[in-house]
Length: 501
Image (cartoon, rainbow, N blue to C red):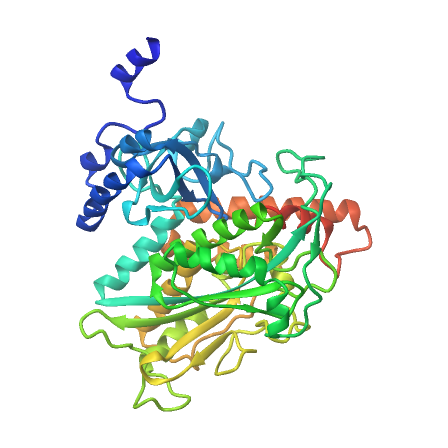
């Protein structure tokens, strides 16, 4: 009886506030229409996972019954600020008790924010058991203003900047990752675990020897897992282009046809989350850590393909001539100029972990080590693929576990700066890439462009999160490696990233 009275007085606990979406006008016409279709599907759903992307690029969620989601859809849902406060090892990096220090008053006391589902992202997950749907949301403060720490909000703002110029950025995803087999009887990772003290990484074994690039038999050796994964992605509505075997043992590459920028970031979050979960169900482990601490493993990268189209003419701005070989337009060269000139200061958003900087080394010949661009050259940071209307650029700097909204937004932001300035790619300054996470943090901290992209609150929050991560790594190294930094991937890195990412 008490719970019914509480419901009448204050609404369902944790379910936003009545008519939050309508009160603050948070949906456009397409979202409102999509919401009507979602409501029609809820009779065929048991549970809904309400999801947002934290600053590290990890999906955070609450699962609610379908009848509760009917209220969540239009009222929003209360979420804790915790994911904005913890670093990658769940150490508290932002002081939420005395002074949050990032200019967001609602972080004090770790107060709730409101997550509003984006009905365009609603879909039923193709899996056995309870009929479960997934929906992404946008973060808002309780007064209805966009949350300044929202990564998805950053990309939405960048896309809006393109719209004001009658432009649309187009993104192609190309992602390398590792498939391994979980071994029986290993620890679940709780020993020694806690806030800032990651427990043991999952115990795994390699699924094949690797080092036979694109060998059909190498792919076939993992096809009993990989083929169902590919089918899963297709059933999720993702525009899958290819599944292929890369170099390392069980290293796979997954590519997609071009998408609009926000759709691509949403797809990346869904892809990584569902691949990890489905692999676990099948006794395997998927990891998007750049370089695991496993024998003979090769680093993985995230290559981001980019072009810009006119919304007035639907013409690719990067195309030059009649499909000339090794040709890109002046606009395309200006876009590249923006990528090059901001590569150092925005590197943190594409390579956000200690481990990611191990890949940016001369020993890995196809990983970028300098700020450069060339036609059809995989050793360059920016590779240009020319071919008339399909002309685009591929930035090869990213690591697979980067926050997709921040990584894509940083590329598009830098490219638009170059595009609007008309700068030539060969005339811009090219500061060297950072070689460590600490070096990347310092370049990012000094960047005015990063503040224009993110706003002061998110920029400062990311600095605090990454400083905490780097400081814990440095403290571990000082205690465990008295003779100096390790040339090989450390146990700390493997515990920190291999399971979570």
